[in-house]
Length: 170
Image 1 (cartoon, rainbow, N blue to C red):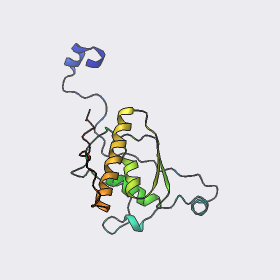
Image 2 (tube, helix red, strand yellow):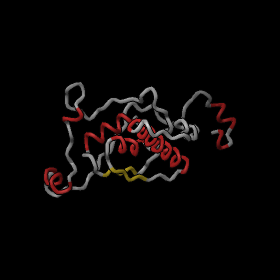
Image 3 (cartoon, rainbow, N blue to C red):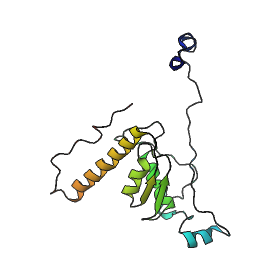
């Protein structure tokens, strides 16, 4: 209300929140090429539509359609709709094979792109907000640099900047 110049109204509703209760779950859309006959036909023709239960057991059991993941302690929150990296990696392992292409039409802070890099998948993404494009690119650059150090510790970059120093939280 204050953004609209409604100071009196904002004071009247002080302590109240506009909108909904905090969500306890969020729907995830899993899209793949439509099939004409059966899912089996789609898997055979387009290599998509199957789920990899064996790679995604939870406590030795098949996953259900309700998943519980949270951010790791060292995972920075960079976007208001950001998902935990571990969740996205789980979904990628569940629904794709190495080398397959994943499309993210709302890249945000780049979690899906980073998960694709970490799980050997191809990535196509779109983001309109230049601020989040920069954040996502920085996350991918930081991961690439860290991987280079881990995989080739003899070749260190003398001009390395600590991860996320360029990125400022809003």
